[in-house]
Image (cartoon, rainbow, N blue to C red; front, side, top):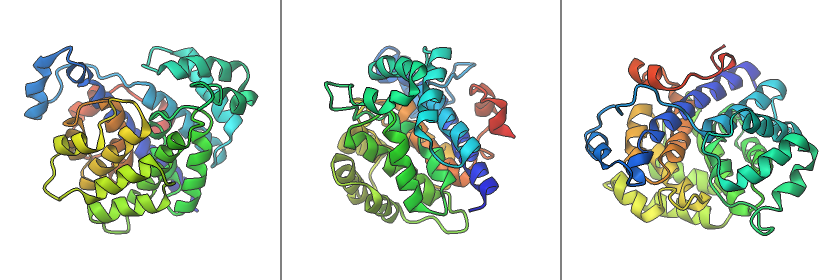
Length: 307
């Protein structure tokens, strides 16, 4: 593996994830019913009105994954646990879920204990949420030349915070999708074939079954219809989030802006579905074709991402 090429591809994915996260967050008030005035702009694809688009915990945690890959070229769970904990301590107002508010302070003070703490969540079942999936696309992009390695590393990274098999499966599916999408020397696969390849590497269970539903959707299906069938992240579960986000990415694998508009139409956990779809598609496209206005409004990333 060309380590520099791998890192550059991961950074492209990370940039797309962050733009997707920041863009998707602009519609969260509409999704929750707090601001229905945004319905027209979303339906008519008008740039969200806010002058500044901050990103959320999706990007904050993805940055930690990216830092570990840049330093070591692989996941090191204790170091990743420490990075998650330190990022949370530095800024805990990024929209982290309740489970992470319980877990991440522990990881900061005792990162070596991550395997014990993560199994304490949700009465010992571990989290089956979408948090491991939302941050993992850059890792899949990094291992673009070895999908089996992407699977193994994604599962390892997921288990630092998500002990439930479905939480891990969601991360694996997204990492595989990003790994496949990042192969720029190959023509994009038809959406249904792409999703079936992702399925082939995803553990059996609810996420896998949701991907099967996604692959079977008729070509004429709209994003709104797909979200009704597959879920849109409103339950904040991996199986309610990942199939839809992967479907949106598969439908628009050569056009990041189009992918984000299509994904946002499904509402729900919009920042997370857009972060996942954005990270997958940008592994192939980068962010060069995203409008300068969007890039200017999106919260900047740390300097190391752009070097």
